[in-house]
Structures are given as structure tokens and as C-alpha cells.
Image (cartoon, rainbow over all chains, first blue to last red; front, top):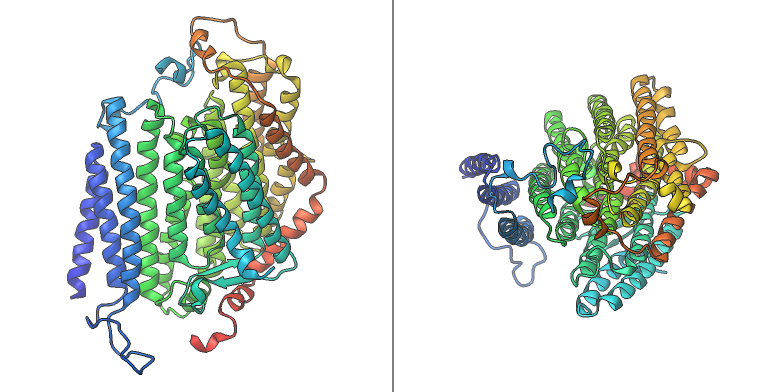
Length: 130
Length: 505
């Protein structure tokens, strides 16, 4: 099973890298999502996949011999919540920036670092843009 | 005080302040005062923590009373306690500076985000669990995202897109590194990892893991060539935001590097040369970037990068004295850099612009501010007797001891170039006559604001700290050396966290 998961992680990370290198901000968000999910799968595989028995200690005993590893699931759950909120934030921010800037191509986003700005003797670039 | 309380208070206070300021979101003036009071309480908690660790004790506690390698540990040695204290000092200074509520700091969400950032930074400094550190990083990041784009201007949204994307990619790489580390060792507790990573009989794997963490923390610390998010975004933020970002965010990355390379992956000879090379390139690119700009904020932002290089030198050399240099450098740099940004904010309020070509004459209109500027500016360049001199001395001396003369040489050269940048700000903003008013000054007039007493209180107290370190360096140097000794001797840390339960391993 594990080689299949590793292949899936590789494909997801590759696609994520491709999408992140796009200049379209929407694709970048999709890339971030995929990258986050490939990281989550990595945690899952790192916890080993030996058994699918739930990690429940039966009555009267204090240890269990064979069960699924519960820790990666706790980690992934945390990571999913975090990546969900960050993605939600990113999408809202991109929506706002599209509403303000009307740009989705990152190459055209030059408001923070104007190209010809550096030694402009007459006015500072920041004020000129406003 | 019990160590549980000492360790949890610096986290609980910002989190409580976050909740309280959120509840008060309709009353921005009250919010700011609550924020200041909470920062003061945070400072008190941080002082108590430092006092408890000053004699070399390492405090540790486990949340939920789960024993150490299984539960989440919080640990405070000298380095962590010092970092928490300096965070608290910055929290108070910034809370004082923003008391007048200018530059969007009166927005209802600003104060909650501010305390969220403080909680995230403090958590990252104190956690003893590598996955937990990832969580604190994310808390810190999402607060910083909100604070950066709070004004909603075009520049901020543009900068926000780049800042958010690059930082999210890099924290994901951190998460992947944590996953691999867990897969290789089966533990996430940093003290436990210290022992278990040594047992991996695959040096290639250990090197790849350490490089993965170098990549993740290096981008957070803005080292060459991973610094692009910083100059693309920092200069768009409001002054208090900029000050707290400049003071804390990159230093969390440096701290994480010091911690992981001190504890989990001891620096090998090859790693030492790689980090040393990165340090040189970081110093040089940062200072050259600063030299090419004429906007106060951009100059100072690039100087953050170049100064990170000095801290890397200590990590690369990894001797007690070199690490002490890094520790002192972090402390000195946080105070000085935040102060420079605050002074830059005051200059803008007086003249209406950050751009050196369109401002001038501050020396005449505000001679006292000009003096206050000289203290952090000359300290940044490393002139004696200011704090930067001692910090640089502690970095350069061990590089010469180990005959890594190229590190020492670059550090000295970059110090000279830093002086050039500071002189540029001095000549243009303070010394030269104010340029004749032209058309665009009408728009700039809207940026001019009233400079309150609170601004000066914040700036003066930070300047006094710089002078105090500079004129009386002995206790600070001794402390840094003590902190570095704890970093190089891992057994004390491991013992404090895991106790005598070595049978577990």
C-alpha cells in the first residue's frame, strides 16, 4: 500500500508546484491546497500503515499490541483545521485584492514595488499611486 | 511560583488579551488601554520567567500532565526566557506607541490580531514539541497576515498576496519536514528527538532532514536566497505593525534554527560551511539592497536581512562564544530595529513621506528626534560604545579564533556599508534642508499627523535600553554566554524535559 501513497504524494506535490508557479492567483490557491494535502498524506504515511484496528484499549488492559497509529490522525486533523482557515483567509484576501486591483496576474501586481520607482526625484512612488 | 504557572502565564496573558480585546471591539480607545495593560502583565510574567531561569535552571511542564515524550512540553532555558522577555518589551513599547490609534491601529480587529501575534511568537519560543512549534508558527502567521493588510490599500493587498503565498509554501515545507522527522524517529518531542536522531544510522537521511528544516526556518528568518517575501511586503505595513514584525517575525525563524541545530541536528562540518556561506550572502545582499533604496522603510527592511546574516554566523560556528554572539545579536537587533522603524514612523508623521528625496530638515524641526535616531542607527552599524558593537564583537571574535577570516571580514565590511545607509538616512531626512514644496506635497500633507508624547516614550525607552547594553555590556555578555553554554550542553535540556524516565527510550 505504502508505495501507492508515496506515488500519490509525489503527484500531488508535483501538481501543486506546477500550479504555484502559475501567475494566476486562483491557481496559486489551488496549488497551496494541494500542497497542504500532500503534506497531510506525508504525515499519514510517516505514521506507518500496518493495521486498521481502532486504537482502543480493551477493558481490563492497559496496553494494546496491534492497532492503527492514532497520532498521525491527530496531527493531520490539526493541520487540516489550520490549512482550512489559512486557505479561507487567502481566498478572501484574493477576492479583496481583485476587487481593489482588478488583477489576477501576479506579474502585473507592481503596486508595492513599482518598477520605475527607485530614484524618482519628484515624488515618492507610494504617494503617486494613490 | 510553580514552574507550571511561570511557563503558561506568558502564553495565557496574550491569549486572554486576545479574547478581551475582541469583546471590546466597539470601543477602540478602551481596547488600546486594555492592550497596554495586558502587555504590561505579559512583561511582568516574562520577567518572572527570566528570574527563574537566570541561575541556569531549565523549567519544563507538560500540558494535560501527559508525561514528556507523549504530551506537549513547554520548556524555558535562558535563551527561551530571554526571547520571551524581549518579546514582552517589544509588546509594551509598541502598545505605547500605538496608544493614539493612528495608522489603522484603531480598527476593531487590530488589537486582537496584535495579541494573537504575541501569543504565537511566545509559544514558538517556549514549546518543546516540534509539531507544536508548527502550530505556533501558524498562529503567528495568520495574525501577521491580518495585521499586514488591515489598511486595505492597494499596496498592502499586493504585498499581502506575495507575503501570504510564500509564507504558506514555506510553512508547508516545515510541516513536511516534521512528518519526515516523525517517520524516521517516531517522536515529536524535541528533547526526545535529540537522542533519537543520533540513533538513525543513515547520515544521508539526517542531512536531508536538517536541510529541510534549514529551508523552512531560513525562509522565515529571511536568509539568502529565501528573503524575497520580506522586502516585497514589509514596507507597506503601518508603523507599529512594521516595528513588531521587524522585531519579532524573522527572529522566530532564527530562534528555531538555533534550537533545532543546537538540539536535534548538531552542526556538522559541511553544514557549518553551508550556513557560513549563506550568512555571507545574506549579509551582503541585504546591505546592498538597502544601499540602492531611497525609502526609509525599504532601507530598514533590507537591513533586517543583512543583520540576520550576523546571527547565522554564530549558528555556523556553533562554539559557545559564537552562539553567545548570536543570542546577544538577536537581543540587540530586536531593540534597535524596532526603534528605527518607530523613528521612521515619526519622521513620516512630521514630513508626510518616507521617501528620502522628498523630505528633509528634520534636524532643525526636531533636534531631539535627530539625537534619538543616532543611537539606534549607530548601534546598528556597530559603533562603540553602543550595543551593536558588543554584539558584532562577539560574532567576529570566534570567527577569527576559528580562522574563518572570511566571515569576520564580511561582517566588518557589511558593518561599514550599514553605516553608509544610516548616514544616507541622516543626510537626507535629518541634515539637508527640506526640499521646496511642489505639487505632490498637497497629497503628502494628508499623511502628516500629530506626533504624540506616547511615540516619544516608546522611542526613548528603547534608546535607553540600547545605551544600557552598550555602556554596561558585562551582565548581558555573561548572560549570553550562559545561554550559549546551555545550548551546547544538550543533556541538561533533555534531562529537564524527560526527567529520569530514560527507561522510556
